[in-house]
Image 1 (cartoon, helix red, strand yellow):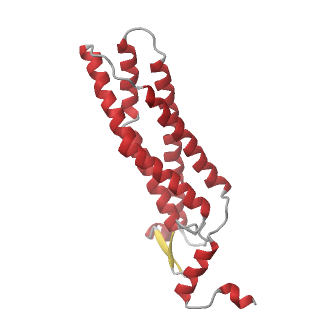
Image 2 (tube, rainbow, N blue to C red):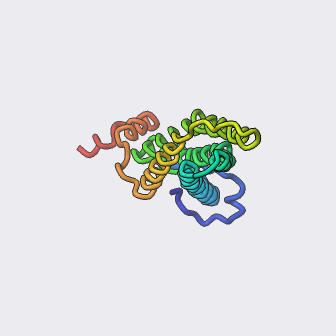
Image 3 (tube, rainbow, N blue to C red):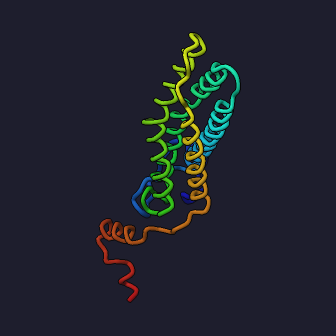
Length: 207
């Protein structure tokens, strides 16, 4: 977390980023960090909520009795929020997380838990954009055709897996953000400090 100072709100609003004189890095101001962190939490929570609703609707659609139009109506409802809205929330979660990493002391590659959390989030975003969204939108078109013309619905039982996997991965990423296990990637940090300062390994000075 960036160090707190006694500057006024106007000072914080002038620049979203401020230089860190100790390490030569740019840091988010306190106000900008709070806004980004709140946005990140809301986006991640919305993503989790969409996945839960997604899974429930899939299960209800699979267990629906009666005409195929019943299942088609549920699939059309899924496509309404599990398509591009889900993609937007996923990208917002990833984007705010990247900014928080770059603009705070945690960085993107300094801590093992940050690397793990970033890897999980990035993998989910790629799967959402490349696999899930096209499939959901395609099934939405099929559901619309089924409701209008009575054409049969294609199988969609495999839609039950994406929300289940996503919920587990998101909860894991949230747990990493709270618990922060694994510590710092110390060797890389020391190597970077030698490159920046041109000094010997700090640990060697203690001998």
